[in-house]
Amino acid sequence: MHRLHIAEAIALDGEPLSGASEAESVLIQSRVAETGKAYCAAVAWVIIDVLDVDADPLTAIGQLPIVLFSHSVLLHSTGDYQNNERIKTGYATSYDGRGIFETSDTIFVLVGKGFRKSLSIDLLNQVPSRSWAP
Image (cartoon, rainbow, N blue to C red; front, side):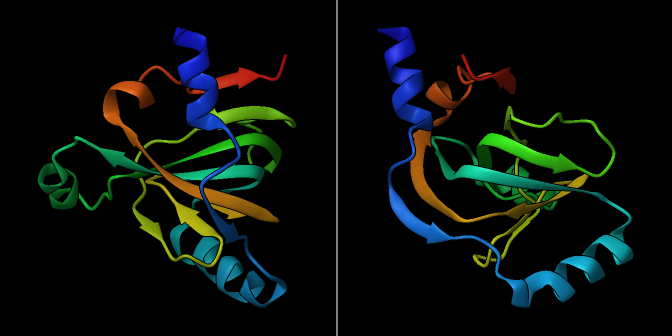
């Protein structure tokens, strides 16, 4: 049952969203240049609104109660994530709704279609931060 809940949590379903378009490429390049952060292209992704978490302490340190789960990394500018690796990020520092998801150290470019859903913090904590597809 435990694995079933995790599989449902990261399933590609929920509110359908579009990823970054070519029009965002200039914005992405400028964000990378101005912040010096690594960048990562991710496909088969889910934006997760985290429930049951106190947002006030997060907001105080510039974070939002949302995380990203990607079923496949296409590339990572520093090689920290490998091609086809599944990842769960930490909390966002910015999410613009146009396919650019930013954490404290990485700018994620969301490629193609994705989804948005809500999960409890307890279930989210059971999802591994990094893994490989079976």
